[in-house]
Image 1: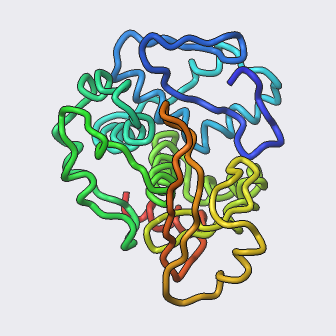
Image 2: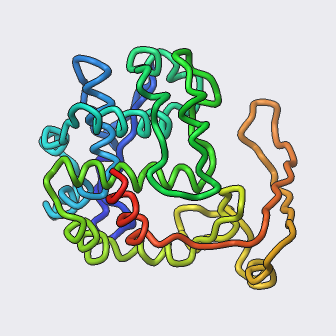
Length: 260
């Protein structure tokens, strides 16, 4: 995004545009000579340390000079960051060419750096050179964890310490901390409730959430209208499995750091 929100949850907001997509001047584009460098740079751009760098400039508008400061990973760290970044962005067949160009057999050797029943290493083992729907991370919990692990990989590439990473998060990202402290996940990795203003309509309302938040077992359903398909609105039933819990990003940083 061209506009930099210094007081928002995140300041530097990157994405990889699929082929043949365009934009107006609300965005700033950077073109790379090869796809591998593109994905390396993108993984750094997703990270909290680089977001902090953009925030520390104090600028209200992005410039072409900011992406030039991106850290490029090397060796094993590059592979781990690359597969996580690709799995976050390659959600549709529009990215199948990019996936094939950057594919590495080492992707299948990946594993999560946090122990949790909602994080299965089968995700990495089942990755294929040809993009399919299963090559993308699709649960809220797994997508958050991929971002946490990218934060740690980039911090280490920059030579930061764990204390420095957690201090950056604690001091410079108060809105994110506030949202994380009241975002709850079910046993399938779905967000069942969140206070995040950036996720309207995700999970139950506050009143309904207060009725079920302390449940230790059972499932709860919510009917939503999905209007994302060309055929028009479709009613979908979302099931949430209790018990529910929140994540502690600082504790997750510690665990991931020790396993990296």
